[in-house]
Amino acid sequence: MNTANRLKKLRLERGISQEKCAQDTGISVSSIKRYEKSGIIGNTYNLIRLAEYFSVDMDYIYNPNEHYKRNEESNHGIKRNRNKP
Image (cartoon, rainbow, N blue to C red; front, side):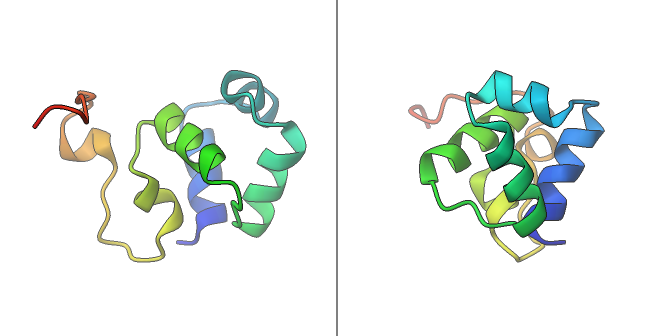
């Protein structure tokens, strides 16, 4: 599954429109649409915001390897503080 498909899948699984995703993340609707169409997220800050918004690792969104798991799958939906071990 590529980046575009993953982003769209994450959004649709949660029943979120592109407009709602844009509003919640502060990313423009046109950027959300472009990411879902092309799969290219050129702005690292936006990648971080999307990963946090969907509670997944950035690698899950952006890395083409399938072995990355969603945070919610690996820690049962509990967000951990990345500053603590």
